[in-house]
Length: 314
Image (tube, rainbow, N blue to C red; front, side):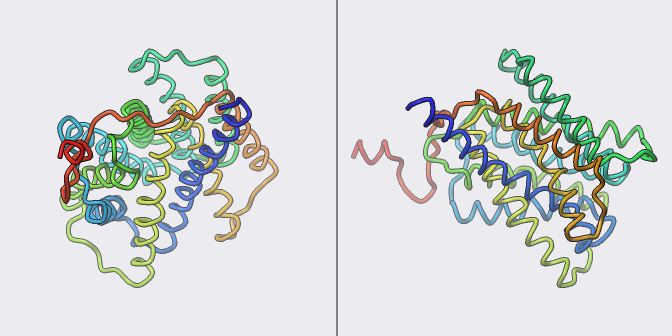
């Protein structure tokens, strides 16, 4: 593959992967306008478990061998622990502060890649991480923003756990013959099973749902979770996590634009400058990235048929 072709392929993969955080940016508007108030754990559960079970039923592919433990760990990091911390931060902090804390995820990814994979981060990517946080802060942070210790710790812990899950997902890849939808179903189901008892213990029985709430949960489950995470994990299989992580900066920018376009919120010149800075950091984090072919790690048996090796042996 020529250098020009490789760059074009990288740009295409990154562009598709970037759709996931753009969709995630709509979560705030959907939650605030359509869903029942003060039910963060139930909302987290409804985002994860139904979508995971449906995808599991459709793909009919289950983790096997060491991938049982890996799927459970990734589901905990990316979904089961991340969602509660995300909502805890959102409920205890102003939205701008929570968004700034979540934008630290690329910096955590660089740190975990160095610790777990001995991948020393370049100065350019560290600079991109710092610039990205500054840009997001200009977009979403307000001068009168109040801080809450528990909320701040939850926001930072959520960003760190998601970063660890991102690094491990990129490092382990996917088993041979397992597509993004099946891989996503494992993590959503595992994370949803963690969320189920937490939601029942902390919030009790599910609330009554009207048509708007049902539509909101369908949107979050189908587009905001199942489709978006499948796209995200597909990108992690092709592009290093230390590059993909910077695409997460698009989420708070998307939320700001949706708030302006759909909810009548204002966009000042300073916010627009912050968007330009955050977008610049996103691009800076992608310089030099190359697409790789997914490397099979294991073979997972399809529950409704023999494996390819068994067919060849027959």
